[in-house]
Image 1: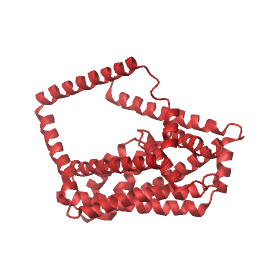
Image 2: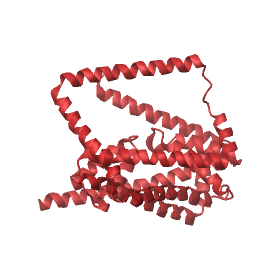
Image 3: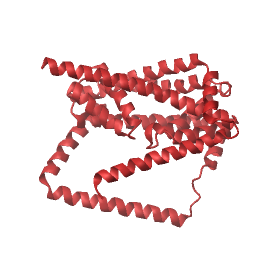
Image 4: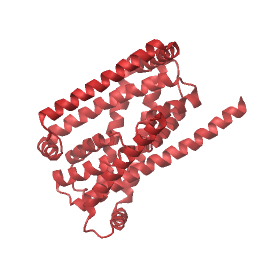
Length: 335
């Protein structure tokens, strides 16, 4: 089987699974007549002021994330403009909606076109960013468990995990280990015998390590930590503004917002286009099981929240793509 066909089948599987999860979520609107009409009605009833506030907060979080990315690249000797980092970041979000995790590479490549920052170095900084984000997410999950421990444990108990026998789990683990070892050994022999591939990997690893270690050479580590905390605080505020936009969820307290935010962040981390599907299944179920929101209202809230957030990314990414193309055309004209 050719590599191209494998890639096509992989993405068909991802999108098929995404559609299945979205369809499964829409079943929560059974008995509500036309499902799309019900969603449109929920949109009309939503407080647009809160939704616009969410859009402003979202853009602010993206600007701060772009600035934090700039900080990570400065120690490597490849500083970039804030505008270049922002455009590349938004284009990355746009690509992520089509190719799961593809945006991490595309934003590095876009920054290279604008700023000539080596892709391997900028990608190392992206990995450093992701490590920091995972730490922040784990802290938020820990806080949410402290505040809403009983409800969250009850919710986890409803998920279809832990139902397989120990022998089945052990078999899956052993198969995974064998596959990983086989791939590692095959890769080792290919690299050992091919001089060009070996040199390319050495060069890529050197640049990647340079970007990854940039976090330890920051002049102002306190400001970097502040930006990281502020980014996640704004993400939390985004959840709060949208929850306040709907009558069925506006009565929920701050601790409930934190729980939903943590569950939503986990759902968005799934390797699906923009978290579509996983978000539409986990968030409505958590609203129903934890806070007794009617299922139809929970599904409508989730679709509008995710759709509004996605629309902001599409507009921001499309505008950034247009501006980038204009800048590159001007650069080519001047050179």
